[in-house]
Length: 135
Image: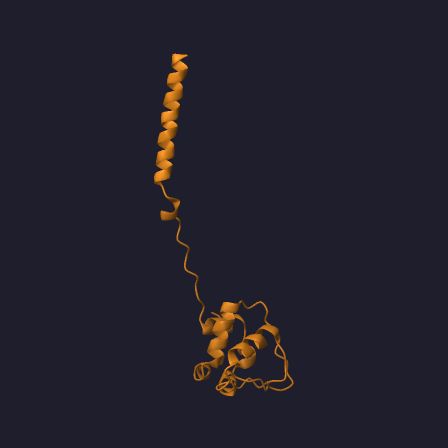
């Protein structure tokens, strides 16, 4: 009986040491840091989503290039919401008979970067067909 009591005490002491050691390790202090999310630029996003196929100056399709879009909406306070919705849902009527296809797969963060880039008046003038190349 004495031997089993001694083993019980040793076992309890060992268990207590393990519990104390574990409680000293605060998981919140050692939690892994999440890798920063890479924010893609306007350039990267318009190439990724193939926007330049239709919206590059001199496209020959009668579709608006970004300088024209930026100019049209330069004094419109609802331009961001309108373009966000137009890209997400598609539609026609703003620039003639050709439909804008919907792009529901573009997430909201990327879409905001694209819309902000479109509305920046002088940025689109830099775009050329060379930007379409994906090396």
